[in-house]
Image 1 (cartoon, rainbow, N blue to C red):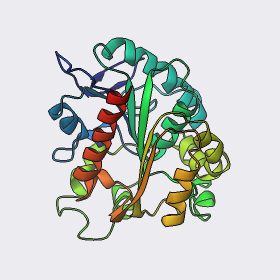
Image 2 (tube, rainbow, N blue to C red; image 1 turned 180 degrees about the horizontal axis):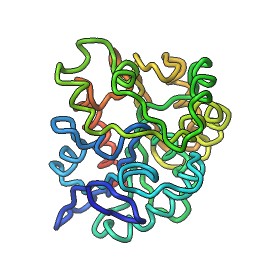
Image 3 (cartoon, rainbow, N blue to C red; image 1 turned 45 degrees about the horizontal axis):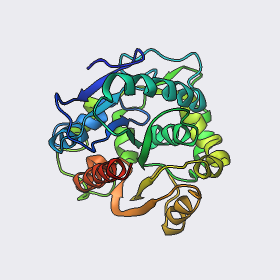
Length: 280
């Protein structure tokens, strides 16, 4: 883990020479994980990207890893910070690439969609998100709002394993243990936001996105309401996106990257990133 940009820690795979028509991929992790989510051995999006000649940077969001926390950990504040931070990332790492493609998961995906809805001057080419939806189960709101009044909340690994993974057989026996190297305390403010305000704002956010969107949601996701109509509704809400690829992945859980389907998901996301750059 090193310091990357805008004071954020994280990890990266960069190249001395970038081939033409390559994107700069920025990978944004979800809640309760650091940027190591994208770099678990055998499941590493960073390794897959650089193998394809794609430079990739995965920051720790504010309040995670060694990144300093914002005074306000709410999702909207993080989105505003990330928009500015990605401008610095572009200046530092974007040379030779066509623009930025964001790949993001879970709460990090929700925050990144907010960035895509209002990107300012960012050279944003597209966004690929997973593990986010239109609605969370109604019973989650009082559960998260009853968390202790602390900045960070530590969720036990055993509890996380129950909600982050799908049915037995959908992931290798080495999981979930291998994923624990990416575990981190979560920001309470964002956990409350995702269950209390996201569903009120999501249609407006999606409707303001004007870049291509790749969307994948797990069928067995314990954190979101998931069925074919929800996935179709998410895609339909992207009314101004020039291209939308929205689909459900069967028989897998929330952290799709850590499941047997993970390699396929990541290759789809990286192929989408290449297409966005080629079309720019």
